[in-house]
Image 1 (cartoon, rainbow, N blue to C red):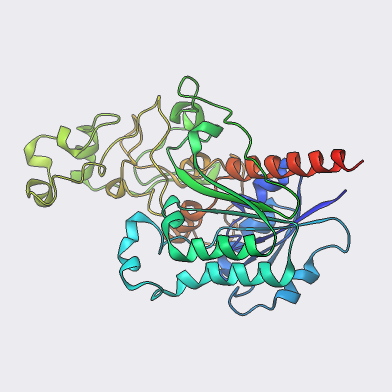
Image 2: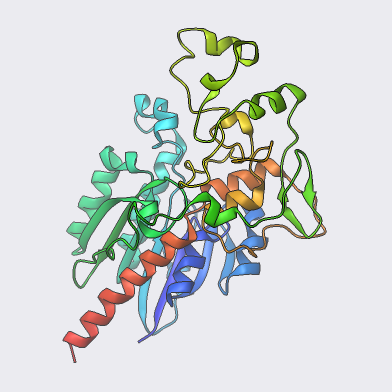
Length: 351
């Protein structure tokens, strides 16, 4: 039996790469952002298709599947409207266009009827009407649906990220495989990036263009030198604190301008992980913020994953968005293994 997948909203290929590692043939990834094409195709066997999900015809998507085998439709609709960091979108219901992307995912499902659906997103999506409608619609189509909130360190991913994972099948409930790690053996920052070459603020590793970090100001150098791994700006002497930190409104935001801890998973890697002031993204011992390569590895991308054409300039903001928005590769692999386990069980039962 052949297992073929199409990755909607594929980005730079985090989910695709994980599914391929699990043994699933990903035939194509579809994304609106053309800038993802290089990384997607350099690291995966699948073809990148530059298209708008809101405009592409379902039949065009369906034709991408081989004529034989299991059809798996996977994807992670952009999650900004659902995230707790952008909760303001919820006040106006469906006002933001990104809300509609999950609707179009559902529309393609209805018109293709794949054997398997896999979706990953932020946990907050679970409580929204649009998600509840999505689940109801696919149940009405005859799918067995299972979803849960996953704590990424439980599956060996070295960051304290939580994600919503939905798996649906026309055949039976797909259970996500049991956690592979526990608090006693979570993958730590040290294990993930501890062996990378040292960097100075604003410098680049000549052997790896992605191992590059932004330059800190003299004041921020003093601040990071006063930072304790796992601590906050509250550890600084008063003269280094920002004005906003001294106001009552700023005292409740401790998780910025901090160092990560070597012996724990990292904080959630956001789209601005390369900025020291954007979270607890200071290196555990070097006086700098995370490099792009370090952020990618903490997202469980392989250390040799190619993100940029060597002949093109580095756009740190775009790369930060691409890496931070990606599905962690290891989570994609876990999703793929769970799907294959279920399909093979059904095949054995039908022999």
